Amino acid sequence: MEIYIGTSGYSYADWVGTVYPEDTRQNEYLSLYAELFNFVEINFSYYAMPSARVLEGMQKTVDENFRFSLKGHRSMTHEKGEDLQALCSAFKEGTAPLREAGSLVSVLLQFPYSFHYNRDNRMHLDSLCSCLEGLPLHIEFRNTDWFQPRVVTELRKRSIGIVLSDYPALEGLPDFSPRISSPVAYVRFHGRNRENWWTGNNVSRYDYRYSSGELEERVPVLQQLASSASVLLVAFNNHYKGQAVDNARELIGLLEEE
Image 1 (cartoon, rainbow, N blue to C red):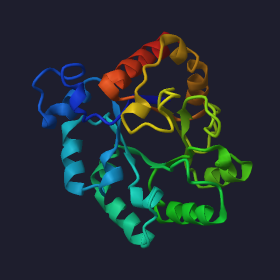
Image 2 (cartoon, helix red, strand yellow; image 1 turned 135 degrees about the vertical axis):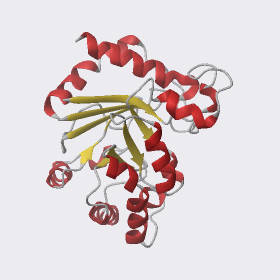
Image 3 (spheres, one colour; image 1 turned 45 degrees about the vertical axis):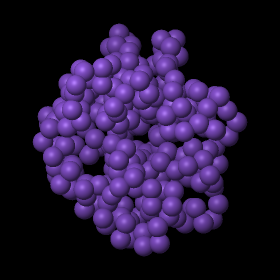
Image 4 (cartoon, rainbow, N blue to C red; image 1 turned 90 degrees about the vertical axis):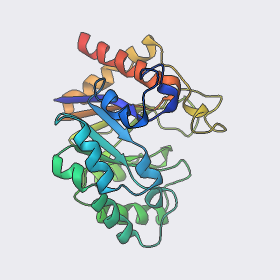
């Protein structure tokens, strides 16, 4: 069993002075991050198609044991671009350096809460998974509609993972129940900021620091996943002010104690 723990993103200006030393330049972020963790989620691939040149440079910055997860581009999950095949081809082409290095451990298809279980969305998901075949796919469903036996069974047939996410306890959001459908288990910690979840932005929504007790209560499930899968990925998305870094470090310590 391999366990990779890190954060969602690493290039945050507000980490300078807290996570990174004062006066750290942006082109030094990744090398410093890789001294702390062996895994990172890449966010910029959601906003812009991944560039082979950029990812090749990133691969050269880390060692052979470092692993990347890349978010799928928003045209695949949120905007539904018309030429899906061309979008998938461009995404695959951009990720080539990481795939060739063996460091791409996941492509994260993060769907919005508004992506409900209906015929059009089922067809889109089927087409998307088919044209991204060959990539290590994980899907994050942000509402409870999709957690049906037939969906889990179909994803298991394709060896596509279902992300287990820790959210605020709000109606409509999935609970913390693992559904294993691929050899790579993936867990994301988004924080439990109830007040800002529906109305906040990408900073305030995830402005949350997990307590030691909250992390400890998740350890048994993580251990269950670690015993059932060959690889366990854990990403903390509560990035504001470096809270994700603190919580990731704390979770590493908790798992090492077990």
